[in-house]
Image 1 (cartoon, rainbow, N blue to C red):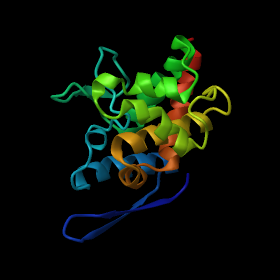
Image 2: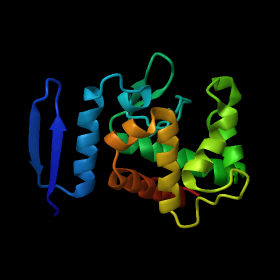
Image 3: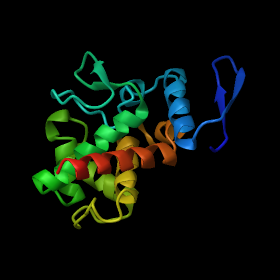
Image 4: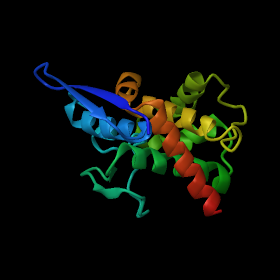
Amino acid sequence: MKKSLVILILPGGAILLVLLWVFRQQAAQIAATALSPMIPNATRGIRNNNPGNLRYDGTQWQGLVGQDANGFCIFDTPENGFRAMGINALSFQLKNGINTLAEFGLRWAPPSDNDGASDYGLKLAAQLGVDQGAAFDLTQNTPFTLAALMRAISHNENGAILTDLAYNDALIGGAADLAQDYVEGNS
């Protein structure tokens, strides 16, 4: 087991030190879950443990605990929210043939969402350092590629600062592994 030290800064400036004798990934999940209600004006994605802002469509995702008033999924942990995001992203490519970030952006954030969907693929491409029209294969170099895409989606949905404050690479990478394992076991 690895030792992980989590420092939470609580409202009012108090500092709580918690020494967690758990695996690093579990410590990251606990920290992200504990942080989300403490971040002032947290985005919907962070409040709902749904960093990709998935809308409820009847899918019984692992860890789904409900939906908010606007129909967005609420997950029990950020890891399960990222896992659902990863499965959704992989299915776009494997089942729907979406293989460029331009196509992906239009599917993830359709124009009907009114959130700059036409720029979504361009924003993802810029964050990932690739051209939005180039083929983007999530099955190559997975889960690193999937984890990078998941972080970029969360940056777009929740802002880079809040994403990087609330979620570390261990949590996102672990969720990408779980998504890939799920898709491989169900294809």
